[in-house]
Image (cartoon, rainbow, N blue to C red; front, side, top):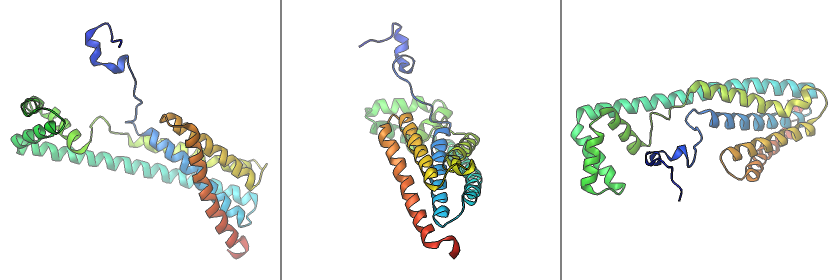
Length: 243
């Protein structure tokens, strides 16, 4: 086993042994969710209205409308959900700080028990809890991490999530309507574009998370196929003349 030359460096394995991706900003989930939602929703949308007998112009207008409305909705939803989650974290921090002020002895004893459950001997756990509680801010952070699995450092930006989902939804939703916007295709060409987009998006998402890219691509194509089947069937049953 090869360790760094400087003994002090062994406490920083991220400097020489491995790296972690930045998953705290919130952009990855919002981007993947937005792209997949844009693809699936607009593929299903154009399949439904095209199957009902709508012209290519109507399909293009409907697809663009779905893109704009969906992208704005996704951005607002991501912003609200992420901000709400951050506000909930802030509320838990306040609760924990008040508990430390009101009952510091009980909080320290609680942390000692938590350390014991992690495998520390009782005396070691009590010493560790005492040392942590020497700094009130550190004590709050440790309690949040061990009691609720929360970290003040993992606070995603609602703006990053909003813009990530806005852009990715727009790109995803635009792919299946490309043939209709530029006037060189029909429903089946649009579905082919959408299917290719699903395969690519699924493969990229799987690669980012170090999963099998083929399985990720197939999964997204399956989801899109379910949406197309449902909306195409409904469109066929209704028909433009019956609307």
